Image 1 (cartoon, protein in one colour):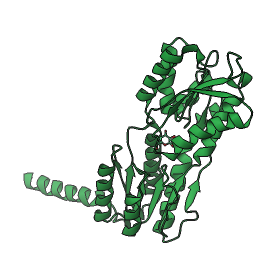
Image 2: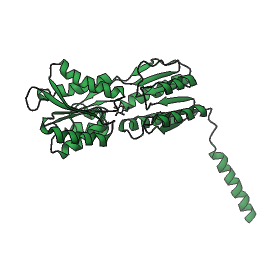
Image 3: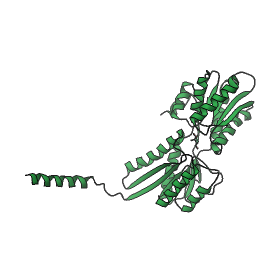
Image 4: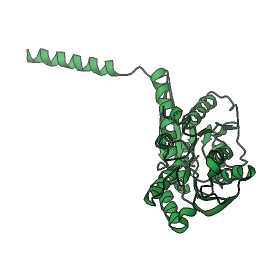
Length: 328
Ligand code: GAL
C-alpha cells in the first residue's frame, strides 16, 4: 500500500513539474537600461514606465520575452561606463541609456561602435553624430523654460507683488552641465523680458535637481533677501518641493506674497498646483517619452532605422486650470 502511495505521489509530482514547465518562448530579448541616478524623482517615474512597457508586452504576447535589466549609475561617470561595458560584453540585444555626463561623448561613441541598438534618453549630447542604430528621445527644454515664464507672466502684475516695477526672482538650477538646466534658466526669464517685464536676479545657484539641496538654497536665499523675493523659479519639481518647505518655514504664502514654479508635473506637484501651494509646473511627459523610447527600441530591434534621430516629446504648461488632467 505504502509503495503504491509513493508511486502515485511520484507520478503526481512529475506531472505537476512538467505541467508547470512553460512552453519554450520563441525569442528571448535582453534590454539593458542605464539610468544616470535612481535617486531622482522624474527618472524614477520614467524607469518605472519603461519597465511597465515591457511587462505589458510580455503579458500580451508570449512569443517574445523581454528581460529588462535597469541599473543605477549613481551619478558617477565611471560607474556608468562599467555598467554599459558589462551590458555590451553580456551581449544585450538593445540598450536604453540616460547618460551621467553629456559634456563628453566618449561613452556614447563606444555604444555606437558596439553596433548594439541604443536609444539615449533625457540627457542630450549637443550635435552628436548618431549612427544608424542609435537615436535620442527627449524634450526641447527651451519650451519648458518658456512655459515657466508664461505662468509667471499670467499672474497679477506679471509677478511684481510689491509694485516696484521689477520682478525680483531667485533661480534654483539643476545640474549646470545639463542643457535642461541651462535652457530652463535662460528661457523662463527670456519670456518675461521679451514681453517687456523688468526683472532682477537676486540669487542663482545649483541644487542639482535635488529636493534637499533646493530646500537649503531657498532657505538661504530667503534668509538673505527676505520679502524682496517675489518669484522662485526651480528648474524641476523635485527642487520646488524643497523650495516649498523653505517658503513655509519662512512664513511666506505661495500665491499671496510669493510665486513658485517648477518643471516635471510630478503627481505631488500637480496636487499642489491644484491646491494653490505651487503657482504652476510644466508636464515633462515621462509616459510619452518612455513610450516613444520603447517603441523606438522595438523598431531598432526589427532592423528599422529610427524615424527621427532626435525625437522631442512636447511639454505642456500646467496651472490650476488643467492640473487635474495630469493627476489621472
Ligand atoms: C530633467 C528633469 C529633472 C531631472 C533631470 C535629470 O528633464 O526635469 O527633474 O530628472 O531631467 O537629467
